[in-house]
Image (tube, rainbow, N blue to C red):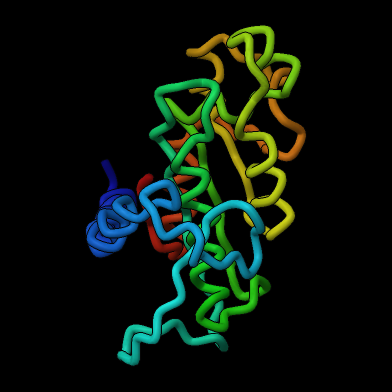
Amino acid sequence: MGIRHQCAVAGVLATALTMLPLGAASARQNDSQGNSDRAVHPVIQEYGGVIPRSDDNTNQPDPDKTYHVIFDVFHGGDDPAKLNPQLDRLARAVNVFAAHGVDPDHLDFVAILHGDSTRSVMTEQAYQKRFGVANPDSDVIAALEQAGVQMEVCGQALSRRDISEEMVNSQVDVTPSSLVTLAMYGQKGYAYERF
């Protein structure tokens, strides 16, 4: 392994480690855990609600900056008939920045789906045929894409799950591998979030 590769890997890992506490805290928040009647949805309606807070501390996002984040969406829900909670969490990331005054044009968010979340990217027809239910993730994927989130899926994960590219939602780009995608965005300096 060359020194440049080692440095790139170290950079991705360092970024990942700095983002873990934020990710762990975010995982505990979920509209289904209550307070959904108080949730607001400033950008993505129906998904990723955030509870308004009056925090006055130094950890507020700067609305003049652009935030570059790669979301490593590995986990999915257990029930194919229910929304993948990690996609709801991704919508929450968009909404929480917006709730703090950051325009969606200042969010450079990329989501790479793989692992258990791979099935989320299937077309309605393919999902219905495989699972016998409508794809509960189609609407949130459309909403995320409309909000400017670049949606990608790991080609290796598709192959391992016998999902052809024709079975992939047209709003999702197929990449060679999540490993390649994560390394590429890490080298570009994107912050890393693991879902």
